[in-house]
Image (tube, rainbow, N blue to C red; front, side, top):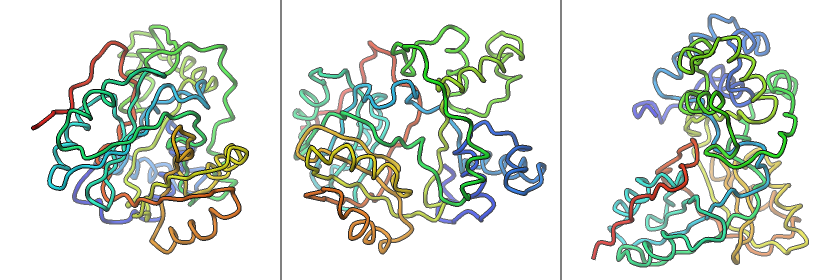
Length: 344
């Protein structure tokens, strides 16, 4: 992300382009222009400017849609750190490929993270490394049991329903019994090459993909269309929410009665502010994350939107710093992540 511009809110046209890319990360400038009532040349210029200065990136989402509803093996971590040792722990966690998301709360001594792991395993980080680290005061881990809303599914609310529908591809047909692989699916050589190439830049042109993967451009275009139709190519827009006028991010740790859990999770997933919602093990059995334009909107969410959902307890943590957000492929099996240094 370009550091010098993170405090300024994007103009209305740029925000609408971001929302268009959320609907379809590979949408052409011509199609976006037609739906949004803009000139194609202007759209190309603005998209180039937004990507060139690091304001946004379009990447391949780490979670493929055929695994929808499953956790693919992930832990939600809550780590309390001794005062003065926060930077050390955050740096050690951020160096690990198996931890894609790290948030530091405004409390200044608390870290939330998501760690990929083998379901049901005695995770090395939780059982050995965190206990051996003197800078860690306490920690909690919860297994993610069910995903209601993924970050890649969140949509910035600046398009009307007709515009969003016109830009969103048809719902993908379910893939036939996919097997887990580095991207959550089993891919042949061409598909794997395309996913690897698109992971950091999902808007790479078909001609460039054809040259990289050694196949005719027509073959690449057909395969991309098939992957998208089967839900095997899901894109995600990476953009600082502050640039969208949403400077407040909050995490919610909720306790919900079992007979309300599924309905409450679905209700949260449908809320326009919520960009993540999942059921977990542990005393807080439903976790959510949301963006807000200000603290008053956060208060309204707590005092109005969470009522009547069977929630018996709410704990709110405001994010002070998003230390790591890494969309990308799940690390290949067998690669051991670096240790969290046990400084004594």
